[in-house]
Image 1 (cartoon, rainbow, N blue to C red):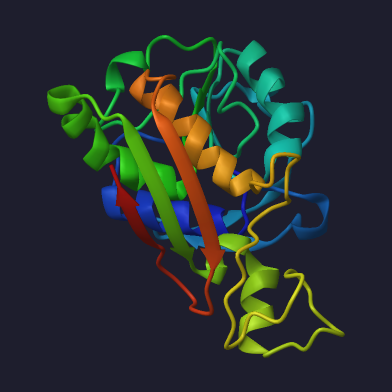
Image 2: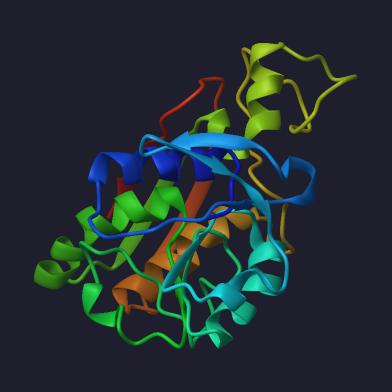
Length: 234
């Protein structure tokens, strides 16, 4: 388990699920190593993730530390017979890695080579609705519009919102987010779409197994702490 804003939320979900007969170990970057967290009624000392961390032998690892960390450490874990469930964008479009939403395509979970990817947060919720519609009617076209909370940008994004940072001392966003809307999530690509917009387009096609669907997307960051809103037409 790699701990950041998302990692701590994963811990909360695991506490709610109360999965039986599991033992846990928590990992983080070097700067947070030694932190103590209470989880499932026990105090855990969070350790620095290194290339030997998986030598102990783990069945599963949940990664939530960004694409670069996942690209480096996921193959190492997989070689140690540990199945990685990766929350980053690192492997989502890799042909050898299944991109899974359990309510949509659980049959592909076992078709993994040690790494399972989960999609962008907005894509996940969209395809749960779109899958049964596509099965029955064969969708021809999707128009996505998403309005995404600053929590999706991590701790620095939240600080920009709460501190109402001006353009001179922004920690995350290219413009002030307080009382503002920014149609710029991740970086712009050559075709004018942002990377976030491409995630929704490309991931939807992969999950539904429909490369022929015409899809466009607009993703906007909005000045609220939590919860994304999606509007889509098909």
